Length: 109
Image 1 (cartoon, one colour):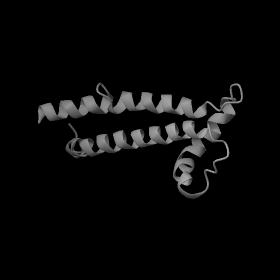
Image 2 (tube, rainbow, N blue to C red):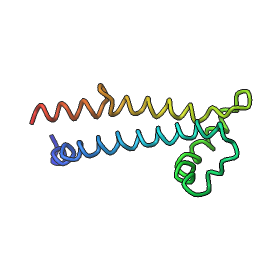
Image 3 (spheres, helix red, strand yellow):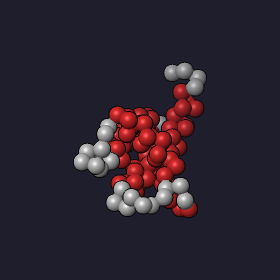
């Protein structure tokens, strides 16, 4: 083990929690965007809607250039919900990479 390994192991629970919460919040924001597609007149740059629009729009704008609307419906928020859910499961899910490293480090301690 290197000298920085104990430090990394000490930071792992906080990193795991922060990543899990961050990905969950991001998923919720994209789910809100899916619901807001039903209301096309909602201005995402005004008031509380800015909290949903500001973190999601940069990713959606890039994705819209790659994925065209299907039948006039913007499917890019659905794509991002799927990608973020996959990433969350791979990293911090029950069998996720960080979860397994965390469990192994706790078993060795």
